[in-house]
Amino acid sequence: MSPAILPFSAPPLRPIGNAPKGAITRVSGPVVEACGLAEALIYHVAWVGPERLIGEIIRLSGSTATIQVYEDTSGLKVGDEVWDTGAPLWVELGPGLLGGIFDGVQRPLPTLAMLNASHAPQMPYIARGVTLPALDRNRRWRFAPAVNNGDHVGPGDLLGVTPETPHFHHKILVPPEYPPGRVEGMRPGSYRVREVIGRLIPDDGSQPRPLRLSQRWPVRKPRPFRRRLDPTIPLITGQRIIDTLFPIAKGGSAIIPGGFGTGKTVTEQSLAKWADADIVVYIGCGERGNEMTEVLTEFPKLQDPRTGSPLMERTVLIANTSNMPVAAREASIYTGITIAEYFRDQGLDVALMADSTSRWGEALREISGRLEEMPGEEGYPAYLASRLAGFYERAGLVETLGERDRRGSVTIIGAISPPGGDFSEPMTQNSLRLVGAFWALDVNLARRRHFPAIDWIASFTHYRLNDWFRDHVDVLWPKLRTQAQKLLQEERELEEIVQLVGSDALGDPEMVVLDAGRLLREAFLQQSAFSEDAFCHLEKQFAMLRILLAYHDALDQRVRTGCFTFDQCIQESEPIRRQLFRLKEMSAEELQAALQGILQQIENWRDAR
Image 1 (cartoon, rainbow, N blue to C red):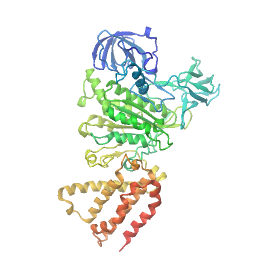
Image 2 (tube, helix red, strand yellow; image 1 turned 90 degrees about the horizontal axis):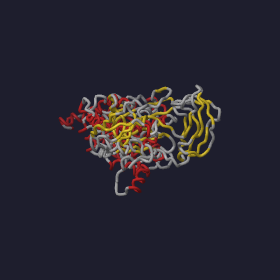
Image 3 (cartoon, rainbow, N blue to C red; image 1 turned 30 degrees about the vertical axis):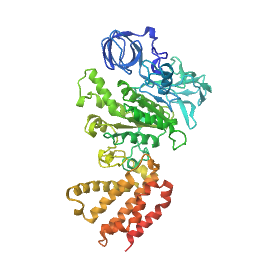
């Protein structure tokens, strides 16, 4: 089946009849070699075979081009024709992205599914060579200009706004590659995404540039910005172990490595649901189909806690499951980060969830093997570290092009699936050098049904956000956080002693530390993703931590007087302890109302004789 619409929503730079044409000389899975493409450039898009399968040129040797094909290559043979489109791999950016579900090369999956159902209902998969524009060509969007004809604008300047959802107004900006100039022919109205809404007359006297609601950008090229800023504001996730112990900044990056069954996908989905980002881009890169199905069916039903509207109204999903062509996994990562940068340029905070980057690495390894490149550690290509760096370095808090003081951020959170939970493998180690937060999932915690199964000893964060928490939550936040980390560390050390000699060898002060660690683990760090406790406000986190540590201090003081044994104190304080384990069930408002009363009970018990 020949495509009726050009691939990638981006027409080639030359008409197809005049496009440089070559012929296939070798096929090795998703890798195809073709001769006769002397004019081709690296990373140009190519059409392969009679069905014009979408591919990307990744190596050139004379007139021979090596192409990684993003669709199933079965049926291709030596001698089949190949065309160089003369354009790189683009994504289309504009109104209609939000709520969209795309594959790794930005094909709209719901529309393709309907097309497939009408033409080939007996086939459960998308037919090869079939593609559609990423953005609906028929839908009209109301456009309200923010500039007048004759106004001078430059790259990134605001042209106008388009209401995309009831709660989100899409900013239409001057494309970054356009030169400064004056606006002409701009008027309000209802437009399709590719209709001209005005023209830019460049100051340098070059040809006028059309202005549209949508724009295109090559996925492998980072979108420009004015300057990078220090990340000093946390991304609030509602997960206590993250926000309190290992926070991430807006514009930062983090990885979540963990073995099978440790909850990587559930953690990423929880972050996507609850993080205080304006836009969420969720990339399912090589994940199992049932996991992506859960995301695709659950997200449209979720309610946005900010607006009460469906969460999909501020979400873009990139679905590239494990049964899709392996080469498309690499494209999905770049497609997602380019979409995230586009919304960042509008002055928004974007959270990008990549689940999982290990599948991306496996795709690189397979393509590298078929290219017969010299393998690096564990068969990964030698350029694995540089590819990871190119991805994670596109995170950041920036001052965008256009109007001064417009700031946006892209926060990247990548899941990693190390074989056997071994964090010494190349994907984890290379990613570890690049990110600012490390949330290590522990198999033993998961087996004990402790979720999130983030190991509070192995995990860390490099982001210094204590000043923000001190100013916006409470001045005691840094002190309580440090005390909690110290108690958890001491508890881990004492547990190792208990395993050797038993708990009877410990004195009462050590038993107080063990008790504090247990309280922190069970009453604070544990958090169900499937209950009302799935999101915890910062004020509630602080109140819970303050109460738990106040109880620990009171217990420690009573034991150290020598008048009471540890067991006596535990028995006397049983009514208080029952309240401690019920703190997570209380709402933020209820806990704030009860805070002083609980603290007073603890103080009265501490001073009782």
